Every structure is written in structure tokens, then in C-alpha cells.
Image (cartoon, rainbow, N blue to C red; front, side, top):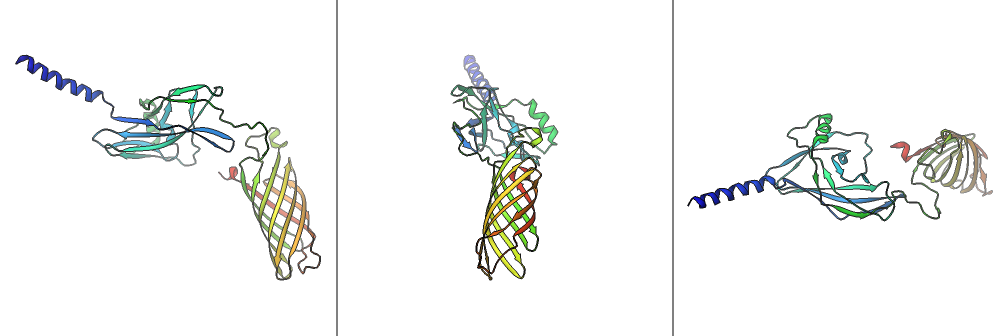
Length: 308
């Protein structure tokens, strides 16, 4: 009988220890997928946190830089940071036996291509009952032991894609053009731009920077009592403070239609604000719409990177 009691006590104690040692939360990494866009390549991995307890898990995250709560155990792998204008902490409530999945962008550093890299992803869980100040959350995050995924293995790759032959010189920095001009006629333009605007300063404070712009857009012209609408296609090149543009448009009005060729030269602040002097070459001579042959205009280019 004494041995039976001892066995029962041992089983109860062993079960309690097993329950104590079992993880409260699990973190699982999904299948890695290599993505490519805009001359860059990265590793996209879904990561799932599961609450295996009988209580609701309440933990901290951020509205923008939620990636800060994740880490990796290999210095050759980096998690892509978020660029934030506004960023506040808030609480996520994860009920028992429920999961939450996020998708992380990662890339390898300082590794030649096609080298095997193994790493795990960790989630720094900061439990919350009530919201705390962002600084308090970050202090606790750095003290927290992460919950880790299973090991992940992949072949290294270059983050930047460099084609052997660079056929397309255009970077993925697009934008908008707004222009207004007046001599004897009033002209206004709104166009969409694709550009070769460099993502990094080429040096000399940008004075040696050659930028190409291709624009397509709409125009409005007030030619005396006549109103005209048109479609415009243009090419523009800017170097230092000098800029030139060649454009072509087709105008519609009650007085008749007109097709024009429009060269311009001007001074510009790196393609941002430009003062132009241009010529209007009307190609339909018998049209009732004959815009004035000279034009002084002010133009503003707003690119995506400048608007962020």
C-alpha cells in the first residue's frame, strides 16, 4: 500500500512538472517565399502565434513598427524595418486556442549567393493588462525572452537585383506634374510622370544629376474666346539647373482641332520647380484654333518619394 501511495504521488508530481514545462504559446513559421519587385528581392515568411493556454493572451504591438517585436538568431538575416510617420502601441487579445499570423519580410546580409543559411524567428511577447507608454513597452520588450519558431533554412541571395544588361534605366519613382503658362493664351497642364530620378544622391549636392521624365496628361487652353481641351505626351531631361522638354499634344475645340509640337528650355531646381520659355508649333494651319507661338510657364513636379 505504501508503494501504491508513492506511485500516485510521483505520477501527480510528474504531471504537474510536465504541465509547468510545456510552452504556453507556440510560434510557427510557414513556407518561405522569395519575392521580387522594383529591383529588390526578399524572403517573405508567414509567422503564426498560437495561444495554447486556457486564458486570453493580451500582448503589446505597434500600429506601424510591429516588426520591432520580432527578432532572428542569425546575424546574417535581417527583418525589414518599417518607415513610420505615426506609431503608437496598442494591445492584441488572443483567445485560448486561437492563432494570429503576420507576414515578415527578411533578407540576408554579407553572404555570397547560394549559401545555406539556417535561422529561427523569435517573437518578444510583452504581456499587457492595460496599455502602457511606448517607452515602457520598448523597455520591457528588450528584457523579454522571445518565443521561437522551428529552424528555417534557405539559400542566400543578393538583396539588390543587378541585371547583366540594363535595358530599362527607369527607377520606380513616379509622380505628377502641374504647370500653368501665359503670354496671350492661358494654358494649364496636369500629367502623370515616370522618371529616372535616382534613389541616392550621385554627388556634388545633386548638381551632376541627370534626370529623365516621361509624362502623359491633360491640358486646358483659353485662346481668346475659345476654350480647348487636349491630351499631351512629353519627354523632359534635367541636368543640374538646366532643363529642356519636347512635347506633343492634340487639342479639341468648337473652332477646330490642333496638333502641336512644343519645345521648351528653362531653369529648374533639380526638376522640382521649373520656369520655362517655349514655342508652340501648330501643324494644322487651316484650323480655327491657333494658340500663340510663344509661352512662358511655371511647372511643378511632385514625385512619390517627395510626397512620403
